[in-house]
Image (tube, rainbow, N blue to C red; front, top):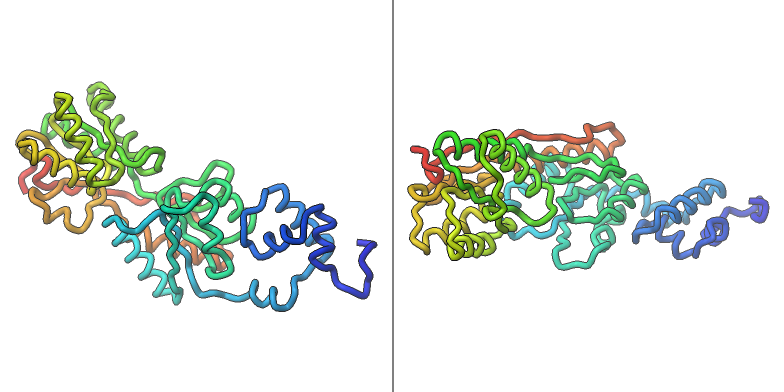
Length: 340
C-alpha cells in the first residue's frame, strides 16, 4: 500500500502486483468471465480489499446493473420431461417480473456453462443436474453469485440450495405395488444415465423394495434406459434375445418405458398380461397411452416454480432452505395390470 500515492486510486495493475498474478487474471475475477483457481481467487479478493480497489465507473455501472433476467443451464431441452419444468420456471419468473435465458451444455466442453450465463447477463442461475461441474459450482459459490440446483444435491463442500423430488420413496412404492399386488418376482430395472442423481435414487428405491419383500437383487435384470426411448427398446430386445425371464419392467422414466413397450410389442409380449410395465414422471400423455401407463407422478412443474422462488429470495439476500424434497405419488393405470 505504501507504494501507492495517496493522491491516486489503486489500479488493476496494483492489485495484480500485490496478488502476484496478471492483470488479466484480476479482470477475470472482477468480471467473472472465466473460472479462476480458488487459491488465486482468494489472493485477488484480499488484494482488492487491502488496496480499496474500485473498478472504473463503466465497470461499476455494469457490475451494479440489474439484468432482470434469470438464467437456466440444462444439458438439453428436447425431452418431453422438460416441458412442465420449463412451464413452471417461465410462469414463476414472469410473475416476478423476470425474463428467462436458457443455455444448453450437451454439445459443449466442460467449463463452458458459466462463461455463457453469469452476472454479465443474468441476476441468478438455475442449474439442472450435471450441467456444471464441481469447479464451476465452486466458483459460483466463491463469487457469491445466486444459484439454485435442480434435480441434484450439492457437493459436500459447496453449500448451494437444491430442489429435488422424493425419487427413492416413489420408486420403492411402485416396485412394491408390482410385487405385492401383481405378484411380480422378476422385475427389470431400466436405469437412467450413469451417475445422475435421479437414476441413483430410483435404483436405491428399487433395491429397497426387493429387499423388504424378500426378493434377491439380480444384476441380469438391470439394464440401460438412459431416459431414452431407443436405448430402453434395445435393452429389452437384448434381454429377450438372451432368454432372460422377467415378468415386469420398471423404467426410470416414462420415455424409456415407452421404448420398452415398443420392444415388448414387436416381440409378441403382451402388456400387462405377460409383463407389467411401469415408469416414472407421469408425462402429459402417459394417461392416454395404450395401455395407459402406471407411473410415479413427479411434481415437475412445481419444482420449476419453487426453484425460481428460491432463487429470487437468494438474489434479494434472504436466507433459504438448503435442501427441499417434494413428494411423489403413484398413478395406477392398466399397464401394470390394474383395472382403471
